[in-house]
Length: 333
Image 1 (cartoon, rainbow, N blue to C red):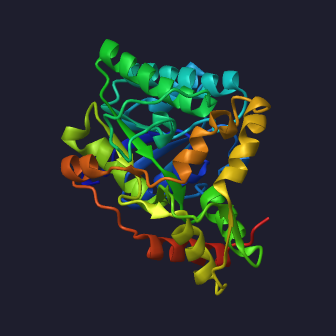
Image 2: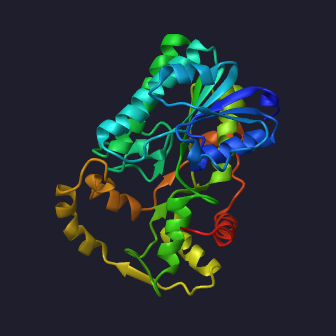
C-alpha cells in the first residue's frame, strides 16, 4: 500500500458494497481516491471521508471516465451489472469495461485492476478443484457470459494499447454491508425453526470476507508480478453450506436444525424451471447449478498465495462473527 500513498487512484462502483469498502480502505492508508458514482444519493458511506473526492460519472460516458482517470496511478474497476436483461448487462459489464480501459490507457494510468467473479468459470462439468487456468464451461447465464466477455475485452485493449491490468475473481463476498451473503443468508439461517436447503448441505460454497477481497485488489494493483494475471479470491479449502448457514444460526444463539430437501425431488422440477427462466436468472443453467452447489468444488487460491503472498485474514468462524456484529449494530430495512 505504501506504493500508492499520496497518489490518486480511481474506483468505479464506489457507492456499492465492494467499491465502498475499497474506497475507505485506500483513503485510510493515505491514498487519494477519486470515487466514481452514478447517483450521489447512494454514496453516503463514502461521503465526507478524508482523502476521497466523489465525482459523477458513468461507464457509458467516455468523457467522464477520462476526467476521473486524469492523474491517477491506478484504476480499480468494481462497477458491474449483476442483473437486468442480457443487453443491459452487456452494456455495463462488457462495453463499460472496454470504455474504461481505453480511457485509462489514454490517461496513461499505470495499472487497471478489474474485479471479475468466479462466475466466469460457469457451472457445468467443472473439476473438483478450479484454478485460474481451468477452461470455462458452456453457459447461458447472462452474468457469467458478460463477465467472461469483460475479461476478454480488457485483455484485448491492453494488448492494443500497452495498458497493464490485473484481474481479481472473488467468490461469494460476505461481511459488513453484504446484502446477499450476510443479510439474506442470515435470514435464511434464522427466520424459521429449521434451515431449509437442498440435500444434506455438505456441498461447498465459496465465501470470502470483504476485507480479504480488498487486500487482494491492493496487491493486484501494486505487486509487479500481478501484471497480466488473474487470481481467485475464495475459501480454499471450501466451506460447506451447512457450516456457513449453521454458523450464522449458531452465532445468533439459534439451534442448528437442518431441513434437507431431497436433491432428486428438486431435480424433477428443474426442467420446468429452466424452460421458463430468462437468461438473467441463474436457473437458466440448471441442472448444472444444482449439481455444482451440492458437490465439494474448490476455487484454488494457490496462485495468489504463491505469486502475491496473499493470505486471507478471516477464517469462516471469525468472518461470520464480524458480519453478525455489523448486522446487529445496523438497522435493516
